[in-house]
Image (spheres, rainbow, N blue to C red):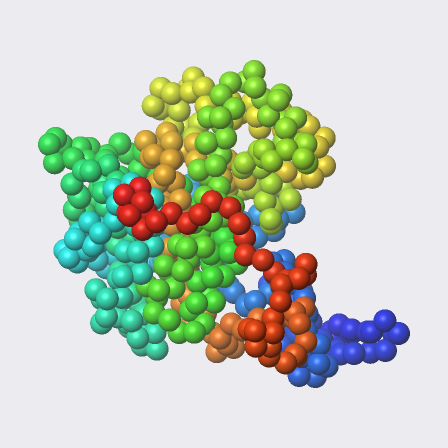
Length: 453
């Protein structure tokens, strides 16, 4: 292990930082004692160059387009595994034996029902509430329904909460959908696998029998696997940050849902389909690409480029193949939206503007199209993402809790506000040009209009 030396502007040595090396990826300068030893901090908005933890769960090589879960390539897992097996892998570090997988699957299956009183909880939401708002509220409330498993210092309670959340997220998500469309909730079925059970709860109705199409279950399985984890993204680091205070796991996952809801994180797949619908036809593609390259135009091509990947997103390759299989098997090969998406991808990858900036299609570009082919409405896209990503969040939460080096998250800052000054009584204060002013604009609506609106 070598040291990295910091110098000031005059060339004087400030500090020696040990270099830490993982099994894959870049080395990291250990700055944990930098403030104590030298009196300075690091400055890294967005944490683009900061490792907040060590983790053995997921590895990404953005330049080469590599995504590994516990060392296994994402395309191998999609081809050879199912989602529950991948969940076990992410949580416990190894692929399960046959007995381990059967026991884990059984434990998850036996937790799929939710407390019956939760159905009345849903009725507190407006029918037009966004499913993510419903998901956020219901998951956050689970600690009130299952207080017997919120002691994060008890390994058995941690495992019970993990299994409960993995099991109940499909039920809670399907209930959110049913509530928004006014249909009765559908109970989970223990005779169905994880993905088939979710599709059954989403799309069956009491009035007639419903048989899950195996092809749709396969596509859902692939979708959940590719979205299950993605290293220290915004929502995962949120879960770790909240968990570092030893908050209960239900609160941590609710925090992850809040972060994922953001339109430039989990909401991006919604934006892709909305963008394609807005473009409409191939005849409008040239104008859309022209507008995307105009820095003064707010229009953007959603689903291109990624904070980490500087080559083709490996998840997008998997989703593209799955989508093509869906179209062929469901006789949707002439789907105009897919034809539009393929042509947009082709033109973008032949355009020097996008190629030079390494703006390749990402997972959002095709995952949204897969969900659309599955019959999932646009407002449910991010909720499906949350369902899948819960496994990754729980894996990181478990790893963080068990990490002896982990401390409560407490970032530093560069303070740029006023220096210490005396308090001025209100009679002596005056407004001048430099004083902050309250924002102006449309007045706040009255309470009755909020309720009625």
